[in-house]
Image (cartoon, rainbow, N blue to C red; front, side, top):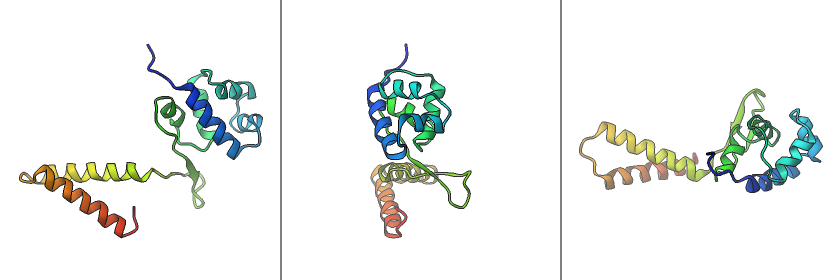
Length: 139
């Protein structure tokens, strides 16, 4: 049995993003080599082949896997091409996700290098690192 896939939510987000980036369904579909009928099915909330979702990610300037993430309850991750290197794609993670990753990394490093830090001390260290990074304008 396949896990629950929220096709209606995906359809809504795909249409919203397509309206920002492309003048029509046909233009969006043509940009990635699919038929406008397939794109229409997607915007109606109907299932399409998995490879189609990869093409939709590309057309909507989302990171690969964004359509799958949306169907699983997550959010798409917008990307942009690097001005210096057009083959390089850049993504901006949400600040909350970056902070959570930093907190986990600090905790892992503290546990790996110290035998006597309490959980409260590790949380305080992580908070200090986050505050320091914010103070430097990196977060």
